[in-house]
Length: 369
Image (cartoon, rainbow, N blue to C red; front, top):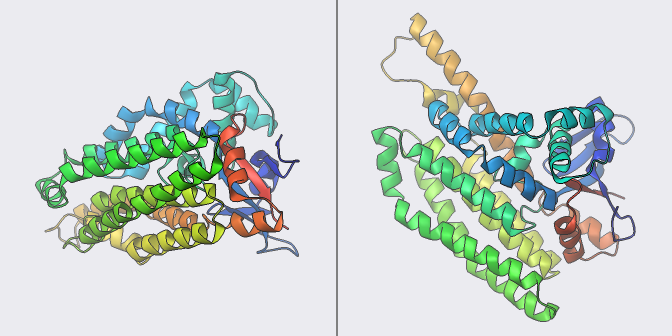
């Protein structure tokens, strides 16, 4: 299926092992979960151009995402509800048939979208693929990046209808400046795309390198905003979350640019830096912290009202904690395929180009040694 001599495979090939528990996904890395190879890397995952089409379809569910996020204070629940809506609205019968058969090539745009969504759901990462985090290098085209930026903005917009405390926090981080930051990221993604059209790869590399350098201060500003919100008393977890997503997107853009320049060492360093940023912000925050932040003040702990509030808070905190751990794992494994590409004699730009060009499968799989 690949123009590169069969090096890249459809990730659906791993479905039997994943569903049986023999393989396990950790970030963008698939590892052996049992047997003599337990713990060893099986392969690496990378989202493709088809994910951009899924995200475009997902935007139609944006109102659902915003409403659910606002009602629950939980962007992860909003994403899950909207993803479920999308899955049921795009040729559900074809999707179910795809899941039943496991690996089955379907034709036509609607069928391909349904099949792609089915494959992602079948290995348990549909929400992750549709989130701001992404799978592998989190940028293979303008459509994907633009849709993810829009999703982060929608989450922020939903929060502007929240409590006075949240509104005060939004004012402190200057919502007008945030709009300018997002506009800047979109302009840089446009430049990234234009460079792919250049016939002179040397000039294209200069553009990509310029984007990587120009985006770094914006990545750091998103980190500063997130840290300020997390250090508030009480911490503004819901508002810090989209700031961290935006920081991850900026970091992903920088990694993609450096990979497009075939600068493996620099791309690895940028990916590791972004992973450290994310880990330092949320790595020490667990479910218990998220539950405590959701409990209303002034309730007697011996009352039934307390038990009910605790139950609701726990239900809301579990998916948020899970999404944060996923984001940390994805950031930590973003550069993982680079060493394998080098061993295979392939350049990082080839990996990106193959992913961008593929519109039949939602994920590509790079086999480990």
